Length: 208
Length: 212
Ligand SMILES: [Zn+2]
Ligand SMILES: [Zn+2]
Image (cartoon, rainbow over all chains, first blue to last red; front, top):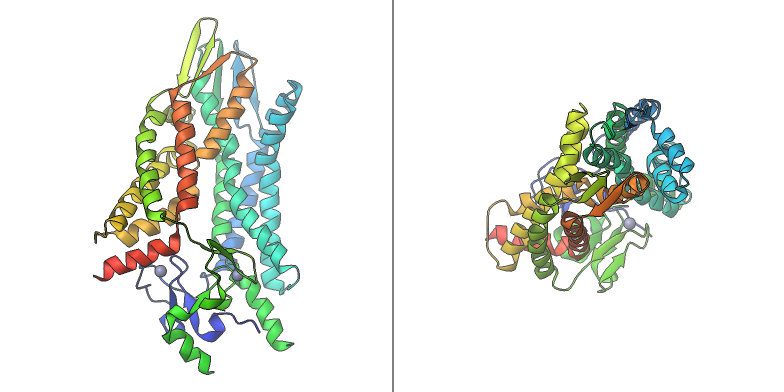
Protein backbone atom coordinates (compact mmCIF):
# COMPACT_ATOMS: atom_id res chain seq x y z
CA UNK A 1 0.00 0.00 0.00
CA UNK A 2 1.30 3.42 -0.93
CA UNK A 3 0.90 6.32 1.43
CA UNK A 4 1.24 9.97 0.78
CA UNK A 5 3.16 11.76 3.50
CA UNK A 6 0.32 14.25 3.94
CA UNK A 7 -2.24 11.61 4.97
CA UNK A 8 0.30 10.41 7.55
CA UNK A 9 0.60 13.87 9.05
CA UNK A 10 3.93 14.80 7.48
CA UNK A 11 4.63 17.77 5.24
CA UNK A 12 7.99 18.69 3.78
CA UNK A 13 9.49 22.10 3.21
CA UNK A 14 9.41 22.76 -0.53
CA UNK A 15 12.71 24.63 -0.36
CA UNK A 16 14.99 22.35 1.65
CA UNK A 17 12.77 19.23 1.91
CA UNK A 18 13.01 19.02 5.70
CA UNK A 19 10.07 17.01 7.07
CA UNK A 20 7.74 18.70 9.50
CA UNK A 21 4.57 17.81 11.31
CA UNK A 22 1.28 18.86 9.78
CA UNK A 23 0.78 21.05 12.86
CA UNK A 24 3.52 23.32 11.49
CA UNK A 25 1.50 24.13 8.38
CA UNK A 26 1.97 27.84 7.67
CA UNK A 27 4.92 28.27 10.03
CA UNK A 28 8.50 28.92 8.99
CA UNK A 29 10.87 26.05 8.34
CA UNK A 30 13.42 25.76 11.19
CA UNK A 31 16.18 24.94 8.70
CA UNK A 32 15.78 27.37 5.79
CA UNK A 33 13.29 29.95 7.02
CA UNK A 34 10.70 29.65 4.24
CA UNK A 35 7.03 29.13 5.03
CA UNK A 36 6.00 25.48 5.02
CA UNK A 37 2.72 24.60 3.35
CA UNK A 38 1.15 21.22 2.79
CA UNK A 39 0.97 22.04 -0.94
CA UNK A 40 2.13 25.08 -2.90
CA UNK A 41 -0.46 27.72 -2.14
CA UNK A 42 -3.11 28.54 -4.77
CA UNK A 43 -1.10 26.40 -7.16
CA UNK A 44 -3.90 25.81 -9.68
CA UNK A 45 -5.17 29.41 -9.73
CA UNK A 46 -1.69 30.93 -10.08
CA UNK A 47 -0.68 28.45 -12.77
CA UNK A 48 -3.83 29.18 -14.79
CA UNK A 49 -3.36 32.94 -14.40
CA UNK A 50 0.26 32.88 -15.54
CA UNK A 51 -0.56 30.48 -18.34
CA UNK A 52 -3.35 32.72 -19.65
CA UNK A 53 -1.03 35.72 -19.43
CA UNK A 54 1.58 33.91 -21.49
CA UNK A 55 -1.02 32.78 -24.05
CA UNK A 56 -2.15 36.38 -24.46
CA UNK A 57 1.44 37.59 -24.82
CA UNK A 58 2.19 34.95 -27.45
CA UNK A 59 -0.20 36.72 -29.87
CA UNK A 60 1.70 40.04 -30.11
CA UNK A 61 4.96 38.07 -29.79
CA UNK A 62 4.20 36.33 -33.08
CA UNK A 63 2.45 39.19 -34.91
CA UNK A 64 4.76 42.09 -34.04
CA UNK A 65 8.26 42.33 -35.54
CA UNK A 66 11.08 41.40 -33.18
CA UNK A 67 13.98 42.85 -35.13
CA UNK A 68 14.98 44.96 -38.13
CA UNK A 69 18.00 43.97 -40.22
CA UNK A 70 19.04 46.91 -42.39
CA UNK A 71 21.64 46.43 -45.09
CA UNK A 72 22.69 49.50 -47.14
CA UNK A 73 19.66 51.35 -45.81
CA UNK A 74 17.22 48.64 -46.93
CA UNK A 75 15.35 46.13 -44.78
CA UNK A 76 12.03 45.83 -43.02
CA UNK A 77 11.12 44.75 -39.50
CA UNK A 78 10.65 40.97 -39.35
CA UNK A 79 8.51 38.79 -37.09
CA UNK A 80 9.80 35.50 -35.64
CA UNK A 81 8.21 33.49 -38.46
CA UNK A 82 9.63 35.81 -41.15
CA UNK A 83 13.06 35.37 -39.53
CA UNK A 84 12.71 31.60 -39.87
CA UNK A 85 11.59 31.93 -43.51
CA UNK A 86 14.57 34.20 -44.26
CA UNK A 87 16.88 31.52 -42.89
CA UNK A 88 15.17 28.96 -45.13
CA UNK A 89 15.63 31.24 -48.18
CA UNK A 90 19.35 31.31 -47.45
CA UNK A 91 19.40 27.48 -47.31
CA UNK A 92 20.12 27.34 -43.59
CA UNK A 93 17.72 24.51 -42.84
CA UNK A 94 19.38 23.31 -39.63
CA UNK A 95 19.49 26.69 -37.93
CA UNK A 96 15.98 27.51 -39.18
CA UNK A 97 14.75 24.35 -37.43
CA UNK A 98 16.54 25.30 -34.20
CA UNK A 99 14.95 28.77 -34.18
CA UNK A 100 11.53 27.40 -35.20
CA UNK A 101 11.68 24.81 -32.40
CA UNK A 102 12.83 27.24 -29.69
CA UNK A 103 10.57 30.14 -30.64
CA UNK A 104 7.34 28.59 -31.89
CA UNK A 105 7.10 24.85 -31.21
CA UNK A 106 8.38 24.89 -27.59
CA UNK A 107 6.10 27.74 -26.39
CA UNK A 108 3.07 25.98 -27.86
CA UNK A 109 4.10 22.60 -26.38
CA UNK A 110 4.63 24.20 -22.96
CA UNK A 111 1.18 25.77 -22.97
CA UNK A 112 -0.50 22.53 -24.12
CA UNK A 113 1.47 20.47 -21.59
CA UNK A 114 0.55 22.71 -18.67
CA UNK A 115 -3.13 22.76 -19.71
CA UNK A 116 -3.15 18.94 -19.75
CA UNK A 117 -1.56 18.88 -16.27
CA UNK A 118 -4.01 21.43 -14.87
CA UNK A 119 -6.97 19.52 -16.28
CA UNK A 120 -5.51 16.32 -14.85
CA UNK A 121 -5.74 17.82 -11.37
CA UNK A 122 -9.10 19.52 -11.84
CA UNK A 123 -10.87 16.62 -13.54
CA UNK A 124 -9.16 13.96 -11.46
CA UNK A 125 -7.63 12.00 -14.35
CA UNK A 126 -5.48 9.19 -12.95
CA UNK A 127 -4.10 7.53 -16.05
CA UNK A 128 -0.54 7.59 -17.41
CA UNK A 129 0.81 9.21 -14.27
CA UNK A 130 4.47 8.63 -15.05
CA UNK A 131 4.09 10.07 -18.54
CA UNK A 132 2.49 13.16 -17.01
CA UNK A 133 5.40 13.46 -14.61
CA UNK A 134 7.85 13.19 -17.49
CA UNK A 135 5.82 15.81 -19.33
CA UNK A 136 6.08 18.18 -16.37
CA UNK A 137 9.83 17.74 -16.06
CA UNK A 138 10.16 18.32 -19.80
CA UNK A 139 8.06 21.51 -19.67
CA UNK A 140 10.04 22.72 -16.67
CA UNK A 141 13.40 22.02 -18.30
CA UNK A 142 12.68 23.21 -21.82
CA UNK A 143 11.01 26.51 -20.83
CA UNK A 144 14.21 28.56 -20.59
CA UNK A 145 15.42 27.58 -24.05
CA UNK A 146 12.75 29.76 -25.67
CA UNK A 147 14.88 32.74 -24.63
CA UNK A 148 17.10 31.85 -27.60
CA UNK A 149 15.51 34.37 -29.99
CA UNK A 150 15.82 37.18 -27.44
CA UNK A 151 19.55 36.52 -27.08
CA UNK A 152 19.97 36.33 -30.87
CA UNK A 153 18.34 39.77 -31.21
CA UNK A 154 20.54 41.12 -28.39
CA UNK A 155 23.75 39.73 -29.92
CA UNK A 156 22.94 40.85 -33.48
CA UNK A 157 21.90 44.31 -32.29
CA UNK A 158 25.24 44.65 -30.51
CA UNK A 159 27.50 43.35 -33.25
CA UNK A 160 25.84 44.50 -36.46
CA UNK A 161 26.47 48.21 -35.98
CA UNK A 162 28.34 49.12 -39.13
CA UNK A 163 26.77 52.52 -39.70
CA UNK A 164 24.96 52.81 -43.02
CA UNK A 165 26.42 49.52 -44.26
CA UNK A 166 24.42 47.24 -41.98
CA UNK A 167 22.58 47.57 -38.70
CA UNK A 168 20.22 45.59 -36.48
CA UNK A 169 17.70 46.99 -34.03
CA UNK A 170 15.26 45.21 -31.76
CA UNK A 171 11.50 45.80 -32.00
CA UNK A 172 8.60 45.62 -29.56
CA UNK A 173 7.67 42.02 -30.44
CA UNK A 174 10.75 41.01 -28.40
CA UNK A 175 9.21 42.44 -25.22
CA UNK A 176 5.99 40.48 -25.75
CA UNK A 177 7.93 37.32 -26.54
CA UNK A 178 10.18 37.67 -23.48
CA UNK A 179 7.10 38.23 -21.30
CA UNK A 180 5.47 35.08 -22.71
CA UNK A 181 8.58 33.03 -21.92
CA UNK A 182 8.86 34.42 -18.37
CA UNK A 183 5.16 33.78 -17.70
CA UNK A 184 5.36 30.13 -18.79
CA UNK A 185 8.50 29.60 -16.66
CA UNK A 186 6.70 31.06 -13.65
CA UNK A 187 3.59 29.00 -14.43
CA UNK A 188 5.63 25.79 -14.41
CA UNK A 189 7.20 26.88 -11.09
CA UNK A 190 3.79 27.48 -9.52
CA UNK A 191 2.43 24.08 -10.46
CA UNK A 192 2.60 21.52 -7.66
CA UNK A 193 3.11 18.02 -9.11
CA UNK A 194 1.94 16.42 -5.87
CA UNK A 195 -1.61 17.53 -6.68
CA UNK A 196 -1.88 15.06 -9.57
CA UNK A 197 -0.78 12.23 -7.26
CA UNK A 198 -3.21 13.30 -4.51
CA UNK A 199 -6.11 12.41 -6.83
CA UNK A 200 -4.46 9.12 -7.63
CA UNK A 201 -4.31 8.24 -3.92
CA UNK A 202 -7.87 9.39 -3.27
CA UNK A 203 -9.08 6.95 -5.92
CA UNK A 204 -6.98 4.16 -4.45
CA UNK A 205 -8.53 4.77 -1.07
CA UNK A 206 -12.09 4.82 -2.42
CA UNK A 207 -11.58 1.72 -4.61
CA UNK A 208 -8.81 -0.21 -2.95
CA UNK B 1 -3.32 5.50 13.19
CA UNK B 2 -0.24 4.63 15.18
CA UNK B 3 2.05 5.47 12.26
CA UNK B 4 1.07 9.09 12.46
CA UNK B 5 2.83 9.72 15.73
CA UNK B 6 5.70 7.41 14.86
CA UNK B 7 6.59 9.09 11.60
CA UNK B 8 6.69 12.60 12.95
CA UNK B 9 8.77 11.74 16.00
CA UNK B 10 11.42 9.82 14.10
CA UNK B 11 12.47 12.05 11.24
CA UNK B 12 15.52 9.95 10.34
CA UNK B 13 13.47 6.84 9.61
CA UNK B 14 11.58 7.96 6.51
CA UNK B 15 11.97 9.81 3.29
CA UNK B 16 9.38 11.81 1.34
CA UNK B 17 9.43 12.27 -2.43
CA UNK B 18 9.16 16.03 -3.05
CA UNK B 19 7.46 15.48 -6.41
CA UNK B 20 4.67 13.01 -5.56
CA UNK B 21 4.64 12.99 -1.73
CA UNK B 22 5.25 9.24 -1.48
CA UNK B 23 6.23 8.25 2.05
CA UNK B 24 9.11 5.79 2.02
CA UNK B 25 11.07 3.91 4.61
CA UNK B 26 14.58 5.36 4.83
CA UNK B 27 16.06 1.88 4.53
CA UNK B 28 14.18 1.20 1.30
CA UNK B 29 16.31 3.79 -0.43
CA UNK B 30 19.48 2.13 -1.65
CA UNK B 31 22.79 3.70 -0.72
CA UNK B 32 23.72 4.39 -4.29
CA UNK B 33 24.91 7.60 -5.80
CA UNK B 34 21.47 8.12 -7.25
CA UNK B 35 18.00 6.97 -6.30
CA UNK B 36 14.71 7.45 -8.08
CA UNK B 37 11.25 7.55 -6.55
CA UNK B 38 9.57 4.15 -7.04
CA UNK B 39 6.24 5.80 -7.78
CA UNK B 40 6.95 8.82 -10.01
CA UNK B 41 10.55 8.07 -11.09
CA UNK B 42 11.84 11.50 -10.09
CA UNK B 43 15.44 11.71 -8.93
CA UNK B 44 15.21 11.97 -5.15
CA UNK B 45 18.76 11.29 -3.98
CA UNK B 46 21.90 12.29 -5.81
CA UNK B 47 24.82 11.98 -3.49
CA UNK B 48 28.20 12.96 -4.79
CA UNK B 49 31.64 12.19 -3.45
CA UNK B 50 33.49 15.29 -2.27
CA UNK B 51 30.53 17.45 -3.26
CA UNK B 52 31.64 20.43 -1.17
CA UNK B 53 35.28 20.33 -2.33
CA UNK B 54 34.08 20.18 -5.94
CA UNK B 55 31.62 23.06 -5.70
CA UNK B 56 34.23 25.24 -3.96
CA UNK B 57 36.83 24.53 -6.64
CA UNK B 58 34.29 25.08 -9.41
CA UNK B 59 33.01 28.27 -7.79
CA UNK B 60 36.52 29.75 -7.67
CA UNK B 61 37.26 28.64 -11.24
CA UNK B 62 33.97 30.20 -12.35
CA UNK B 63 34.75 33.51 -10.65
CA UNK B 64 38.13 33.59 -12.38
CA UNK B 65 36.57 32.85 -15.78
CA UNK B 66 33.72 35.33 -15.26
CA UNK B 67 35.95 38.35 -15.82
CA UNK B 68 37.55 37.48 -19.19
CA UNK B 69 34.15 36.19 -20.36
CA UNK B 70 32.65 39.61 -19.70
CA UNK B 71 35.55 41.93 -20.46
CA UNK B 72 36.96 40.52 -23.70
CA UNK B 73 35.09 40.55 -27.02
CA UNK B 74 33.05 37.45 -27.78
CA UNK B 75 32.72 37.98 -31.50
CA UNK B 76 34.26 40.42 -33.95
CA UNK B 77 32.54 41.23 -37.21
CA UNK B 78 34.69 42.49 -40.07
CA UNK B 79 33.51 43.61 -43.48
CA UNK B 80 34.90 46.09 -46.01
CA UNK B 81 37.44 47.38 -43.53
CA UNK B 82 34.86 48.06 -40.85
CA UNK B 83 34.80 46.02 -37.69
CA UNK B 84 32.64 45.73 -34.61
CA UNK B 85 33.21 43.65 -31.48
CA UNK B 86 30.66 42.44 -29.00
CA UNK B 87 30.71 41.69 -25.28
CA UNK B 88 27.80 40.38 -23.22
CA UNK B 89 27.25 43.81 -21.71
CA UNK B 90 27.10 45.39 -25.16
CA UNK B 91 24.17 43.15 -26.06
CA UNK B 92 22.43 44.61 -23.00
CA UNK B 93 23.14 48.19 -24.05
CA UNK B 94 22.16 47.47 -27.67
CA UNK B 95 18.69 46.42 -26.53
CA UNK B 96 18.54 49.51 -24.33
CA UNK B 97 19.36 51.65 -27.37
CA UNK B 98 16.53 49.92 -29.27
CA UNK B 99 14.19 51.18 -26.49
CA UNK B 100 13.55 47.62 -25.26
CA UNK B 101 14.22 48.47 -21.62
CA UNK B 102 12.51 45.47 -20.01
CA UNK B 103 14.19 42.99 -22.36
CA UNK B 104 17.59 44.59 -21.82
CA UNK B 105 17.10 44.28 -18.05
CA UNK B 106 16.14 40.63 -18.53
CA UNK B 107 19.29 39.92 -20.56
CA UNK B 108 21.38 41.78 -17.96
CA UNK B 109 19.90 39.60 -15.22
CA UNK B 110 20.01 36.23 -16.95
CA UNK B 111 23.40 36.55 -18.68
CA UNK B 112 25.43 38.62 -16.19
CA UNK B 113 23.92 39.26 -12.75
CA UNK B 114 22.41 35.84 -11.97
CA UNK B 115 25.46 33.82 -13.15
CA UNK B 116 27.72 36.08 -11.03
CA UNK B 117 25.42 35.87 -8.00
CA UNK B 118 25.29 32.07 -8.29
CA UNK B 119 29.10 31.85 -8.36
CA UNK B 120 29.50 34.19 -5.38
CA UNK B 121 26.85 32.38 -3.33
CA UNK B 122 28.25 28.94 -4.11
CA UNK B 123 31.86 29.94 -3.33
CA UNK B 124 30.86 31.55 -0.02
CA UNK B 125 28.61 28.64 0.92
CA UNK B 126 30.97 25.78 0.08
CA UNK B 127 33.92 27.66 1.59
CA UNK B 128 32.09 28.00 4.91
CA UNK B 129 30.82 24.41 4.84
CA UNK B 130 34.22 22.94 3.95
CA UNK B 131 36.01 24.69 6.80
CA UNK B 132 33.11 24.16 9.24
CA UNK B 133 32.88 27.88 9.79
CA UNK B 134 29.57 29.06 11.19
CA UNK B 135 28.85 32.20 9.20
CA UNK B 136 25.86 34.45 8.79
CA UNK B 137 23.33 33.98 6.00
CA UNK B 138 24.26 30.39 5.15
CA UNK B 139 20.68 29.18 4.74
CA UNK B 140 19.80 32.42 2.95
CA UNK B 141 22.66 31.78 0.50
CA UNK B 142 21.52 28.23 -0.22
CA UNK B 143 17.91 29.29 -0.62
CA UNK B 144 18.83 32.10 -2.98
CA UNK B 145 21.08 29.80 -4.99
CA UNK B 146 18.22 27.34 -5.48
CA UNK B 147 15.83 30.10 -6.48
CA UNK B 148 18.26 31.72 -8.92
CA UNK B 149 19.27 28.41 -10.48
CA UNK B 150 16.95 28.34 -13.49
CA UNK B 151 17.30 32.08 -14.19
CA UNK B 152 20.95 31.92 -15.19
CA UNK B 153 20.91 31.37 -18.95
CA UNK B 154 24.50 31.37 -20.17
CA UNK B 155 24.12 28.14 -22.14
CA UNK B 156 21.17 29.63 -24.01
CA UNK B 157 23.19 32.79 -24.66
CA UNK B 158 25.85 30.48 -26.12
CA UNK B 159 23.32 28.89 -28.48
CA UNK B 160 22.31 32.45 -29.42
CA UNK B 161 25.95 33.17 -30.34
CA UNK B 162 26.07 30.09 -32.56
CA UNK B 163 22.82 31.04 -34.32
CA UNK B 164 24.15 34.59 -34.81
CA UNK B 165 27.41 33.31 -36.31
CA UNK B 166 25.49 31.20 -38.83
CA UNK B 167 23.20 34.12 -39.68
CA UNK B 168 26.17 36.43 -40.28
CA UNK B 169 28.43 34.03 -42.16
CA UNK B 170 27.14 35.20 -45.57
CA UNK B 171 27.28 38.88 -44.65
CA UNK B 172 30.70 39.32 -43.11
CA UNK B 173 33.72 37.71 -41.46
CA UNK B 174 33.01 36.65 -37.90
CA UNK B 175 35.93 35.82 -35.63
CA UNK B 176 35.60 34.46 -32.10
CA UNK B 177 37.47 36.30 -29.34
CA UNK B 178 38.95 35.47 -25.93
CA UNK B 179 35.53 36.21 -24.43
CA UNK B 180 33.96 33.31 -26.29
CA UNK B 181 36.54 30.78 -25.03
CA UNK B 182 36.19 32.05 -21.47
CA UNK B 183 32.40 31.91 -21.76
CA UNK B 184 32.62 28.28 -22.92
CA UNK B 185 34.71 27.47 -19.85
CA UNK B 186 32.30 29.34 -17.60
CA UNK B 187 29.33 27.38 -18.96
CA UNK B 188 31.11 24.06 -18.41
CA UNK B 189 31.91 25.13 -14.82
CA UNK B 190 28.29 26.16 -14.18
CA UNK B 191 26.92 22.87 -15.52
CA UNK B 192 29.44 20.84 -13.48
CA UNK B 193 28.52 22.80 -10.35
CA UNK B 194 24.87 21.86 -10.66
CA UNK B 195 25.71 18.18 -11.22
CA UNK B 196 28.20 18.09 -8.32
CA UNK B 197 25.90 19.87 -5.88
CA UNK B 198 24.44 17.46 -3.32
CA UNK B 199 21.54 19.53 -2.00
CA UNK B 200 20.65 17.24 0.87
CA UNK B 201 24.19 17.14 2.19
CA UNK B 202 24.44 20.94 1.91
CA UNK B 203 21.24 21.45 3.87
CA UNK B 204 22.29 18.97 6.57
CA UNK B 205 25.65 20.72 6.97
CA UNK B 206 24.01 24.13 7.10
CA UNK B 207 21.67 22.89 9.80
CA UNK B 208 24.61 21.54 11.86
CA UNK B 209 26.55 24.79 11.55
CA UNK B 210 23.64 27.05 12.37
CA UNK B 211 22.67 25.02 15.40
CA UNK B 212 26.00 25.69 17.09
ZN1 LIG C 1 13.05 24.40 4.68
ZN1 LIG D 1 7.80 10.42 -6.27
